[in-house]
Image (cartoon, rainbow, N blue to C red; front, side):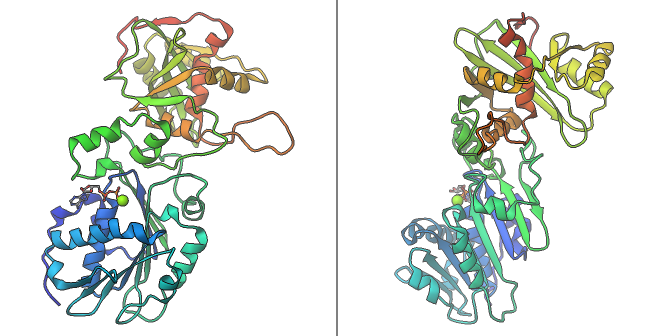
Length: 426
Ligand SMILES: Nc1ncnc2c1ncn2[C@@H]1O[C@H](COP(=O)(O)OP(=O)(O)O)[C@@H](O)[C@H]1O
Ligand SMILES: [Mg+2]
């Protein structure tokens, strides 16, 4: 076996633990330009050199030639390993000269090839399905069955993809153990996040995990304005489709493009404790332009009242904070502790009215409010077959609830305070 000194600096740190991961099902998903394809191409080259036989698959054969094929050639060159392979572009195969181990490529649209493809020596040990969301569940099952026969290697199926829609079969079949509640990458922190059980490993990465990007690449992703694209391609979170309650929102860097001066500012709070977070939002309202700006949010679990009061003093100062009416005692205690906590009115139709009112405005969310962006992209109607009034589907929408409370006075004509009356820290 030819010796190859791999310079680990060529591999983004977040992926390094996966060089030798042996889970049967490995999912690499997240935002665009996060380095998924580059890493998996690099790993394929190293794995072939170690004796594995790898089948690289995409839905459409034609797209392989311009994506994975090139990525793997580039990876082989970067590793200084190109000379160790004999390459047939027409047959779409790469063979390790010394051992005969192979990297093979096939599109799911080439059914005959998919059925018959076998490596020169031994059996397939790996299948990498690139852009796996293009494939059906049945495609995946058929491919999974192709990994059989004796081999010294653990067999693996690797899926790489952007998280297009949360009702996708991949989300349904593999993300049961992935905790949605803390799904949002925290701004500033290293956002790579992982999960593993006996059979499955999942890694989510975003552009922030890819140290090979230019500042321009990063800027384009950070400033993506379309709400859906921002969720899927910038944050790398499952997008939503159909039955969405709010489509009237977009993401904007409000530090670079602040809202016009002297807008009234509002604070709303939804109580939580153990499972559900306590969620608080700061919003400004431009009545004339019919626009709501989401300036800042925080969500936290396990906050006892005095700790919450401290957070609120820092977050809202002496401003009125309109709170969820369900916990009058907590509101009273917050007032004792110097927070101008007020109680939201809660009629039987208040949720629906609040939603309809918010739908009449354009909602502009600051780029740093990742939790709010996630909630807005997932907030959808419950399906009802019996014609009962619409109801939001259960799920994490605490910041949206807090927003309804914050602006409740506007719906009923109560007065609010002016912004910026004191310096509001963005
Ligand atoms: N290990 C690496 N070495 C050099 N460049 C890299 C590496 N990883 C990523 N890149 C650069 O980042 C870009 C985006 O990475 P890519 O793997 O295509 O992301 P994803 O598949 O997550 O969208 C690549 O086109 C390449 O320019
Ligand atoms: Mg890719």
